[in-house]
Length: 338
Length: 279
Ligand code: SF4
Ligand code: SF4
Image (cartoon, rainbow over all chains, first blue to last red; front, side, top):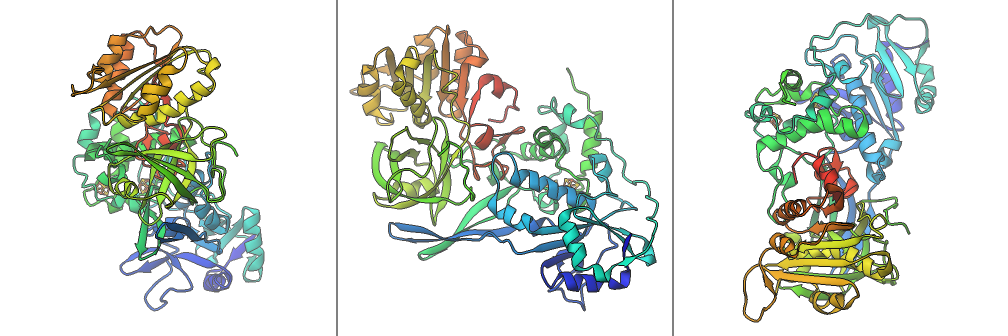
């Protein structure tokens, strides 16, 4: 089997960064996320391959928080689309975990299927290679397995498995991965290593049957109760690797301008406000309910699996302690009159 | 061209020119748009929508009327906010962006052989009108056509020429018009649309009812139809709420697991009743 020894990791990243933007988990400003290897500050920022989930997910690599779509010129009655900005430059995400890889599959299903391919997402995604890392020791807020994700088999092009001091097992899964492996094969070794034993999950939750049960719980009093502490700050949607809602806005000055899209949040009132003044989700309760039903029921109905990948980020980030695991448990226990 | 956008860049508009603008009411204008070189950027089926983009201002989803052989797309747009205010201020010759068409459209084929009952309020006549015009173009394929339409006042009635002159003259067609409050010079019906429908009381036998208008009107019309014996399969409505991307990606127009822009905006009452009551 192929092995990447730990002292060669940086050389591999340097090599990959010659022909692609390589995003790796890094510490940055008391926080962490996936950032460019090439433009990191090596004095201050550490590679965080050992940390399970860095604070921010790699969602922005394929779906940037704000993204220019096209530029426009309007002068009097004349108007013109000047240029569109699909970005097909090569990108690699190195070291993402199974939950974040699953989230990319969610984004793929949203942006690339059901009748329309989003050209901006597609340009990035077609030129992206995923190098995922298997998890043998789930963290305190991890519950990916309960959401149907296998932490040992991230859905990626290449899987690396941390075998301690001896290095990483390097497993190539797809033709895209094959090409990348070939390009750095001189930095890999041939030797046999045994992957570690997988440890048990600390967070246990049973999602079985929840999507079906939620079908009958739209009007359930539980939503009033569960949402009562929510501040509608939207943090949970920003840190979530699979939340994909966006807004389209314009920036213009004089005769020029451009349209861009940016992440939006279903937790905000403006999100569903209509030009005529109506709003089908006027209060926290309706917005909160929609977020959790989208994650746990609606997406499953449409795509066959939930939109929550069990990464635990929203649990860590929520300022008022709202916890999706508790919500699943409460739904499980709730009594529903039939 | 098909009536589904198959373009490579579904979020990027095509530039069209406004070739005519008509005042429909004090706050509704019709905009006629076509490519500068002539023709339309895409075909639109009855009940589908398209995104109109006033390039530096914003985009909005509007129901769009087009018929085979027609050289322009027509949008009837009501002034309700920032974008529509700006659109109402433009003049003939203005270039705009459009993208689409979006949505499922009306089941025009399935309705063939049926009598049609169209019930609309205010600007809600705009989407129904594309279906009404389709029926008239294929007049032999449909039975009796009944149109019930109301607005706040006489001035607020859209498409008056068609409503009072063209449509009533077509064979086997009845047009009923009402306004909310009595008004000098108006000797037609006064009252709200749902009550007027009950008064007319069209027999449900072999009829498909199609309704669109303000949400509150739709709710009462649905109740009236139920009272008159219409089954949920006989009732169709169109919901044009809060669409943004138009292609089922941006998230905001969902009702349960359905996206209005993709799976709607046209639903039968049977379908609507299976969705969470969030419309
Ligand atoms: S992070 Fe917590 S408080 Fe903020 S919107 Fe999400 S659930 Fe509500
Ligand atoms: S909902 Fe929370 S736990 Fe689930 S994928 Fe999003 S951030 Fe992670």
